[in-house]
Length: 328
Image (cartoon, rainbow, N blue to C red; front, side, top):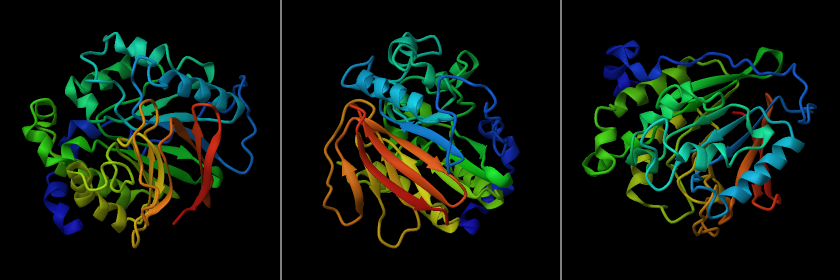
């Protein structure tokens, strides 16, 4: 992978405006304040929720899932929330002042326990209007933390260890988007090779105990898009980087379901949290499937230096699935 990315790396990543925000910067978690949440973290150091494919003005179970997220994060420790993209249906937002910010986000995820930091990425539906409006909203919202279309963040574990999360934008990695009348104007000029070079360099230089990559489009899926053009496109350019750096988890959305899968011979678990509102069918009998459910819901992560616990919770608050993943 180094040889294929050498040209982009030598060009100098400092000239890319999209990556000048938070790469490699430790997060200052607000652990000294006492609030209504559970504060005892037990054997795990960091906890977070992941939800994707949600923004429907509360419709199609979005509100029910949000209510259960609030209840869960009130009863369990939680440090932040990840959004795996497709944040606003049907066609993104037109500006940082679009009414959908209120109707699909602020008024839906209103529980006090959900006012902690959100780290979003962009989905394909977000590309149908102005994707940079979601970046600009970070200057208005206290909790919406999206400094660029792709970025990274480190979180502290015990004993000076860290967990690195790389939040990427998979949309420019799909060649067919460039000729699409809706996506084309917003992927133009994104230079996916620069993003891939940035990711490769980030994963190469990081000393983090955990390195987790978050993108909207899955590399593998047991949903309707198992062999879709977008799945294949992202797999082609992203899987070699994940394999080279022995990344244990790739977290995505796009498929409207909850999935834990691993293709034979790969080093990483493909986790899909895309049940934030509308759901689609899954193929649970595929060999690569650990778990796949056409269910409204979200994922809850707990990690320490040695392992990560992943739970799938549905719109009624029921724990559908629990698994553990060891660090590589």
